[in-house]
Image (cartoon, rainbow, N blue to C red; front, top):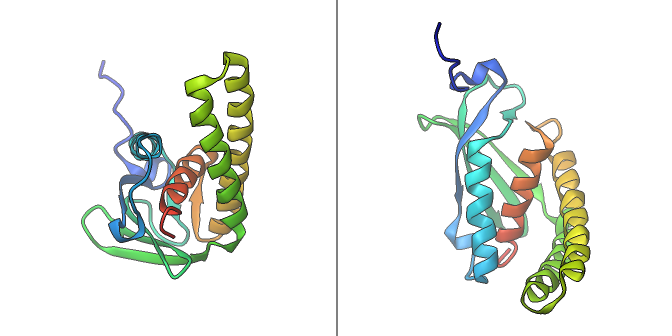
Length: 167
């Protein structure tokens, strides 16, 4: 009897991201907490995701994410370097959510240092709520362009938030 194979065949369940590259020109220095969140989001995203450009065959994809002139750029190519498609999305629908998320993250990181566990938990619940809202808006913006699940959208929103520092 053979061992079950890991999901190496993207056609079994749609496409998969195997790498995410954040445009260094779109990012400026940020806090250690944001840097950590960014690294964890990329790691988690690569480990488990559903990412399928609409109208393209299933494959293993690389996503280059950048912000240019207040636009979010999703440049997608296959693992072997073949360009698939580039989507340019306005950041306007996400701008207020990103600002709200930034404020609540600052409160959360400050609370970790000084607040009681119940205060930290309350702030974290609010932070997750705003994060979910941003993820939902991002999924809506990607609808008809890239098929993603909620977990993938959540991790992508974390990266969009990381890009906001300069974008």
